[in-house]
Image 1 (cartoon, protein in one colour):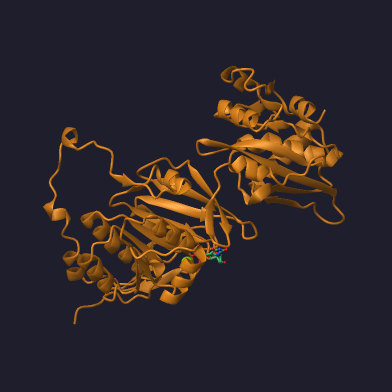
Image 2: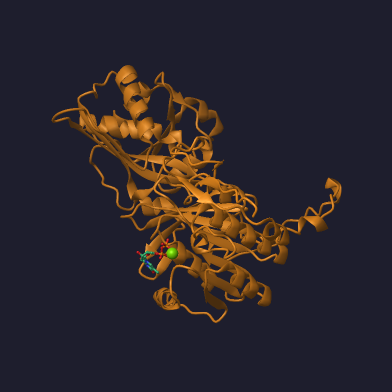
Length: 453
Ligand code: TYD
Ligand code: MG
């Protein structure tokens, strides 16, 4: 009998080791190795014959036409994809459980009235899906449901029918019966993705794969499949807010900078087309510790309120908490404020919150955060008609930001009177933009004077 050689695969990153190890040398995850039997060679060969038909093509002879796309009509969704769904592309949609992935997918399916959509579900029963569609208040005979997880049967049905879009909810429940490992393991998910990707490409059917995200924020276990698909979308949001943000972290057919903003309602996800107005609608006027920043989300500027609360530490170490902002960046800003701004924050608890459940990842929000902190510390409200933009360097200098012109435009559009920007950005911004006063600053002290008086 031939010796069966098994391998151990890290369920977090896909690293392969010949023997079991407690800690993965690649991603440092503990207890993540699971034994997997190798795929029998004939199975691998049987399904991998596409390459043999290929011939190398000179670059000049490649058809350079734009890929055929179709739009869903949900403009926030289309924009994140780069202008619609590309034929034959495979899109991975990741997100925490309960964030609304299935809801979004069902809405997309229902939007495409003219297309035959095959919705393969491995998680919910037909009844549950029907109940969701009832909630969305829409039905469509062109959405075909298939409650199945066995890929052999699924592939057969895809081959037999002629779906124009396939949704697989979720990839972690799909399995190849010829593999021994359990559904959801790295081996299965990778093989399932490979199989589905191949059929999407050969039949030129666009396909969405829904994937769960682990607590670390990576698509459960199989980081490996992110390489196999064309586009990776992340659906994010804070649990207690109804806003949801759709972000592309990889996109072969578009930019990865665009985001789509949605709001979860009783009857499904609704697009948010004027995010600044929405995010500013609940702001508190006249209280200390609140500043408006103009943050770029993709190519779109959004005005967001950043809040800070600074209170004297009652005992022990001072606390630093950040929601929607990087905690390390906050600690750096506090250090700069101490050293360059001459403030004493060592005995203060500092809480920072980006309102609306949004996450700001760009340093241009630094100045707004610093201003909120100082405003709360001194208990002096920042001017409610002023927007702050600028990255803060370790020397307390205000550094140039990208897209200053668009940020200023957005602030002007929403009726703000002043905007504080890095001095070096001033030359890129035409003065008198819709009557907004543009103030250039060089240092944190100067900026705080402008913002807080
Ligand atoms: P779901 O799409 O099932 O999430 P996922 O597939 O990402 O796990 O959505 C789950 C949540 O959304 C659930 O808590 C109910 C809520 N929801 C609404 O608030 N409004 C709606 O119209 C629908 C369909 C769901
Ligand atoms: Mg779901």
